[in-house]
Length: 453
Image (tube, rainbow, N blue to C red; front, side, top):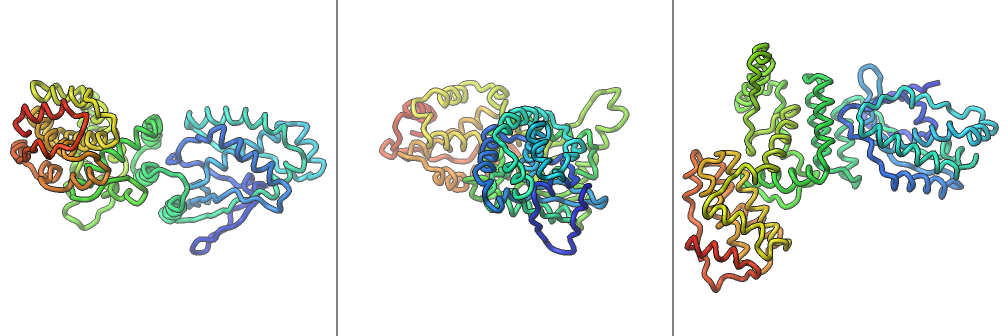
């Protein structure tokens, strides 16, 4: 018999429940959830813990947070990975006839697992990992006896939290993760922006957006956000941007297209959003096949929901193809070639400086395209690599402070109305006695060629 979820009168009322209770709770997995990705290591660690602590009075497995919608359905907000793994363990117990039969003789009301039948998992990554992990668990279940099985159902516990307000549920979820659970800031942004588009984007489109996001390697997402978008957006405003953390996700939150705040500044963004939306949905697009991309800019106010994901895909492509897009000539080509071969390029400090150079170049191209791009490469190189030549060691703080200091390169690009407004900034020459860096001979040669050394 399926148990009804407890009503939450007001505030947060956590309830400690057993795995048996958990397995008899009807739940759904919302589309904004990440795929099921627990590894073999996670599986073995959980089962080892169950076997180790089976003589204890109880064993707490963590917290599961649900959002209860208006129809009474429990959407799992936090604890999906652990919940699905517990379902797999219960399923493996059921399918082991010897173990299940022996346990039923002792405990006749052992729950029959209906949850696995009703639970819908559509993500292909989740399906594959569930299948692979079930095979692994089925082998480990051979280590279970009746005592272990009863311990799993009756004394393994989770803290169940049910919240009726979705925003409150995610605030609780975010605060839980802020206390140490390993969740990347871009994962929090994904959940936030999927919620923002739930009522105005089709289910098919939401699924496609999630799949595109999940098919991007985590390392690439970390690089896009932490090394590029976060730093550019902060540096243009004169703010520090050393490390992108959960405390910084507000940098990528903005205005919602369907909420009418009485703020004039938002009108321009909503007009652009809805005009492009209408243009691309017009029946004439079936004839002319023209699609109008949204005119993203790195320093623009974020439009929550679908546009956020489009923005990330836009800059993912731009960052990945900027080398092949730019066809430098003359000194600009010499600079690009030198940055890939000079002796000290693999040092940590040199990587910081290259990131500074790349971010400024991306910001310039984002604003002015390839107009005067060779001059921009020269100017940005001289500016960025001045700190490389002047410092024996370049630290993260060195790069970060330099990005927002005179001559305020990111601020100048942001404020420029035409390329020359930026390209005419002055870069001071370096005296030979001020050069502290080693393994930078090729770079010094370029400075000399341009008359700045």
